[in-house]
Image 1: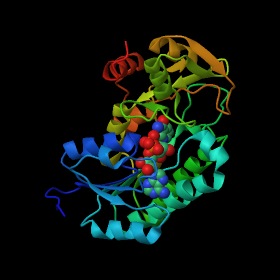
Image 2: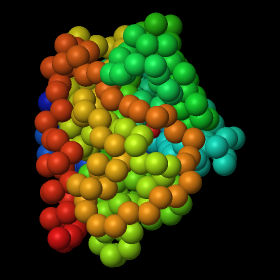
Image 3: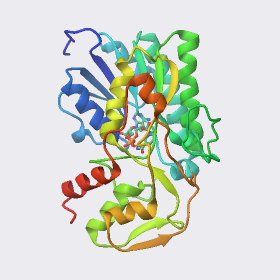
Image 4: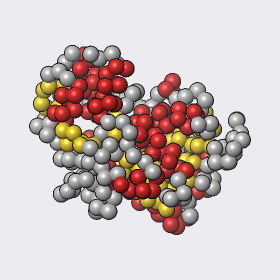
Length: 311
Ligand SMILES: NC(=O)c1ccc[n+]([C@@H]2O[C@H](COP(=O)([O-])OP(=O)(O)OC[C@H]3O[C@@H](n4cnc5c(N)ncnc54)[C@H](O)[C@@H]3O)[C@@H](O)[C@H]2O)c1
């Protein structure tokens, strides 16, 4: 096993074979971190994990196996916790399975990080903790109102993350992401997210399927902005007490507008349980992390269309 030569250079990334994790692992490896990925590959892809990282195929609901990985890493500096069973509708269909991974798995990760003396845990939280709020932008001082098992579970993960900071002195921070999109996102399956699905439909030459009336508005965040926020959250001197910080594009688009940016015919399908509108207030991220979104949706979609050879 490669030993780090510089202080604070070992990172464990749970869920590092998933969409966001793959980008984060690559960025950490580029910065010279010794990266260990923990993933059970239920949806993550082994071949997508950067070759400079060490992959441990472990389920986070198995505390014993998880602790073995943490103990095998010479010094655990940063833990980025992304492993999760995501998607609102999936959690509605499978509340117990998602609870096991999203809450018990998160608790296991915190126990393992605490026992390994990790210097900081960065938890991937979700804007779904807000649910529907009467006003925008969504800011961290608003009371949470999750509307689905997923939203609740991600929020409970935040609370545990904060509690491990106050009770056990484990430095932690939570980042609430807003609809992350970018290269490598899976467009397939009934639980796929809108942007990769829309792009895939455009590429296949079939109508873009929009839920409801398409006037629901979403903040969309490029994955490179999320990766940068994670690295800043791990290294910033201003956080570590379980703060919850929005990470979003700071602008909202209706699904009709998103479809228009991609182009082509649309078809409307029944609405799902989802908040009507989201837009992140990002002032706290700027204040605590010096972070601001850099990639606009127009720019991000244009790059994706080029990458996917969509005209
Ligand atoms: N993508 C978004 O728009 C978004 C928005 C808000 C929050 N988030 C959060 O960001 C994180 C990463 O999201 P993503 O989009 O990359 O998801 P993803 O599904 O692509 O990745 C999740 C990874 O976790 C792994 N995993 C699942 N169950 C596991 C288990 N029991 N043990 C070990 N590994 C397991 C999967 O194999 C996968 O590689 C999640 O915590 C999610 O809640 C994502």
